[in-house]
Amino acid sequence: MTGLAAASTRAGRAAGLTLDDLTQVELVWIEKQVEHWIRFGREVREKVLDRRRRILFFPPGSVFALVRWAANEHGTVLSRLDILRAVGAGEVCQTIPTVTPGGDILLRVDAWPTVKRMLQLIDAIEAIGIDSAEVSPDHWRHVHNRLAAGETPRAYSMQRHRAFLLRREIGA
Image 1: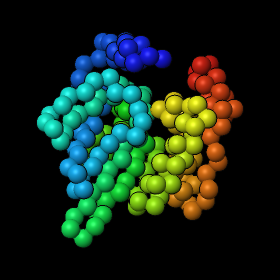
Image 2: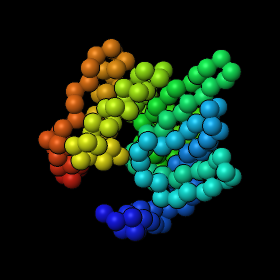
Image 3: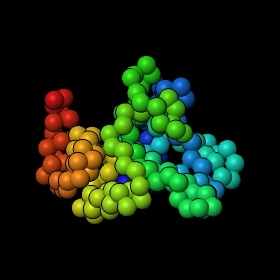
Image 4: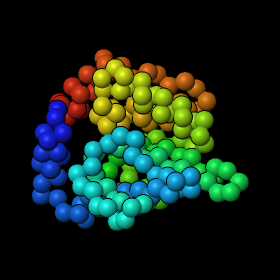
């Protein structure tokens, strides 16, 4: 899909939604101090606050990965990756710093070695041609639970992805 077609699709999906209906994620980038970025996901709007801060807006139901890293003079103080589902107005959600109103946490990992491993798992999914934002939310929950238990998560395959898409299509 071309950039223009993708932008058009995103705009179409967000049609009829106000800013209050969208999940807002504030990203900060202060080199070697505080670095927040989106690893994957499709925002429908971006608002630049200044050269170090911007806000991305995600429609309800969309899935995105937020990476947060911070350091001080003694080294890294925070390394975290959250995979979240944007919630609709009035929907129950968990609070996450920099995310308004919050989100449905599908996966959360802390500490750089685990964050790095998670980034490699995301890369592996994308290497087989699957957009990480389209992966089954149940897979992200599975990965979270397996990593929390110190176990290796099952790989996400094209076959699993097709099954998820079919299940979503029939509304199961």
